[in-house]
Image (tube, one colour):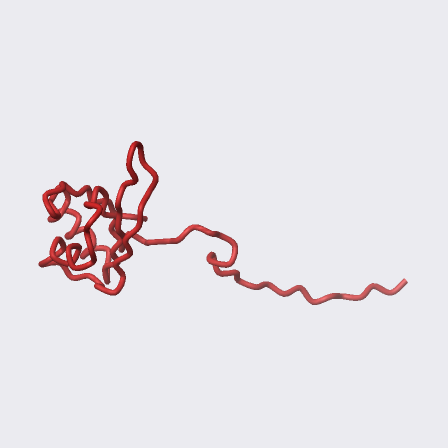
Length: 105
C-alpha cells in the first residue's frame, strides 16, 4: 500500500467574499430624520466645518409609519473626523428638521 501526500494549501479569504454586510469601520455617519425635500447640497451645508468626502453622500428612504424616513450616509477620512462630526452635528438642524447622527461600525 502506497500513501500519497497531497499538498494542503491555505488561502486567506477576504471578509467581503463571504459576508454581505458592509464594514463602515467607524468612518461613516448615518443622518436620520432628513426632510423629504433635502438634496446633497443641504447635507453639505449641514456638515459645514467638517472634513468628509462629498462624493460619498448617499440619500435613501427607510420604511416608517405612517411615512418613510429620509436618511443619508456620509464617509469620513478617519474615525476621529467622523467622531468629531458626530459630536458637533448630532441634534443639529437641516431645513428646520432636527437630525439624529449615528456612527456606523
